[in-house]
Length: 332
Image 1 (cartoon, rainbow, N blue to C red):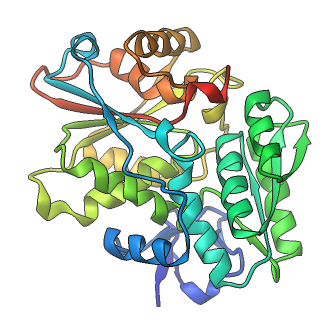
Image 2 (image 1 turned 90 degrees about the horizontal axis):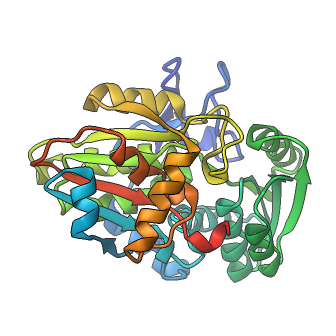
């Protein structure tokens, strides 16, 4: 039986207490985290998913160009090109695992809140699994992402408000229909699925990893993977969470006012001597253009981590990895 805990107030929960969409602490309302880093290994993750289904997510290429390395001033700059996942973003890694859990629990529908990429991903995997997909998203969502989601046949509910407003609506929907609806999103099941990205980074032995902040789930997932494989390298890398400087940023994929995983992020940054780095929209655009001029086309949110690397001093002998989280075709 798995155990999860609330980092904020320290309460421990058993798996059976949180199966029916109870992904938050009953006391403080913050999201729960796996209490053991070996909750699931990369090999068992592969086995569970391939026994059910897969759209060939993961194992994405690493992009490298000497001019980009010179721009950052490090020994080696690597950009993990997550735009090569089936629906064009890193979200597919977590979506496949959430669908596996939904099927195991006998659910017929999925509900989630999203700024676009997670919605597109879950819509695709729901289509493949013959599940109904219900999505709450802001009216400001990119038309490109909306068209992609509609193509998969999902039901979209656009509301006046931001991501956090959508999240409240999705959680209420899931609570009202918990016997048949699985609540998807930046909770622990997605976190476990996205650990696969961290496993793919370990072999490069990075000194610094720049990750787009958003809800913080991706950063925490990568950290868990490294933590579970500490015997494979000499030290934990420094993690830097990069976010857009202002609310309502044009980098809509990371436009989150109250990150779900903020307490987990604070824990990671404290442990690895990392920090939160804010980047202006103009600097994100310049970073996106630099990448495109070298052959890598990412959306603004996908270029955010590279923009952060450009704004930060890194040791000239360091190996730096930036997560290129989503395709440029997502938000033209």
